[in-house]
Image (tube, rainbow, N blue to C red; front, top):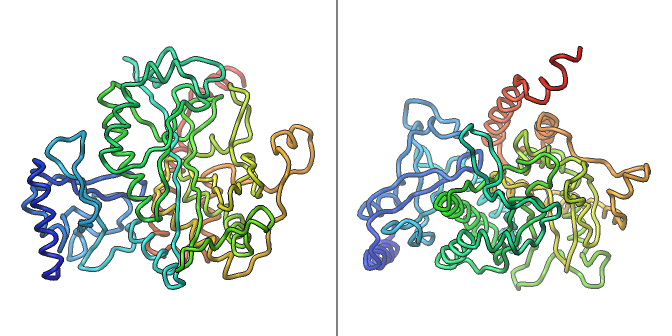
Length: 448
């Protein structure tokens, strides 16, 4: 740590101490996208910045670190700029960490993965901007351990924008407003979504790394606030059969060194420049492999199904095509930017963004041709029995197979992370494949 940086850190610590901060919650993200960490005293912050807060490497999902030796320790190096008091944990400041092992950046750390992709972009003088749209459910377990929506009165057949549910759950929403505002979020809207128990909270876009950090802080906050209100903040993509699932849409754009839009052209088809069309083509070209990163759970593919919804509406982005303000397409263009509709809230947001950027850049560098735009409601087209565009993988197994076969994407995100991701997710698929569900018992136990 340089003398100037050390002085700046001391000043920052002094400011935190003056605000009553005595501890720092040092957080990192495991391979599954889950925030993890530990509390350290404020006085230990300089060492956590220079060397890192220490963790047992093999105890963290996806590090690939051994049980012994110099590289068995995972060190989370605090990013000083991320320090800020947590309004829902009095006396505690939050800090984002980068993963290191053996004094080197850890190639299985997803935040390091995204930083590596952004470094490629910065060589071109470009900046990657992302707006992330968190959708989530408020759930609750009953005495028998069965999951359901936390608000038992939330039962409308078409619940989008239900103001009665907002009034009943205003305590949770207003606490989210207070805490997120105190944490520096620029809130834009809160609403009840299209499934019972489902909400969306939108906030201003940011540069990609900051956007990913902010989303992880959003999750940390939402988990704590929901628990305070007797509910569970759920990132499960599809907790309710017959209802729409939750997405985590990425609104993405690029700017050059002069701040000019790289992918937008008001006079171009779909409002995109040639570079924008090639980026979109890269996303669709690598979509099957990206599904593993952006929709990484068994449950993700219950959302990614062209099935009926109790509300009469579904927004599932099943088909690999692009359309102007067309929510039935995997890529939606709006106001000169690209909305990538594949990700869901169970993803590791750093890995999903890294893969998204790598795929788009490959589309640019390979000069992939523009994908013909789709002007159809694809659900109506499907109902009419007409030929459909190619669709995404139907399950996690096929998505993992696609990622394993996509050499370009795997090399871009790194061999270490790819190997650990495939190993853990194949294990997840195998574990699911050995389960016998209630549906199977009801259908087959006395039917054969």
